[in-house]
Image (tube, rainbow, N blue to C red; front, top):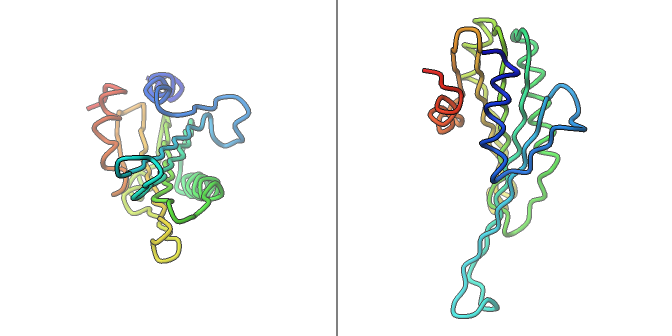
Amino acid sequence: MTANEALERLLPSYYRYYDVIREDVEPPFAAEAHFHSHGEQYVLVKSARVSEADSHEYVYFAVEQQVDAARLDMLEQTAWQRGISYVKPHNSHRNSDVTLIVLADHIDPDALASVKKRKHYQSYRFSLQGWSNFRLIALETSTGTLACNRQGQNLKKLFRNITNQR
């Protein structure tokens, strides 16, 4: 499976709940997906609102032939900066997470090993107005090797099911 084929298998799983953007995506990404959720709790009538929470996720898909540590750094920083630029903290803001999915035919072993150590976190007003986490998952399509950071662990099983990797 090539990196482009992996992208074509992954994207349909995002269409149901995410707003997927394929055209007009600024390089270096092949696609973006945005998720927005608003939840409320109220007593008897909606005007007696107890609480509300907004959650957001911004997913960036990078399709590459070869990825080394410098390219991975650039993809990571670009995804984080673009995702954080969408965040508008307010009292009902819970979280805005940024996810980077790297699909590459070949990934340098040093870059693949560094995936586990990559992290970003930002809180807004001491977490009173929410926070942002960074998830990273990388797939080397030629060997089927999958690596992710700590925040990306919850995507690992789903990602393997979608791409039929072990």
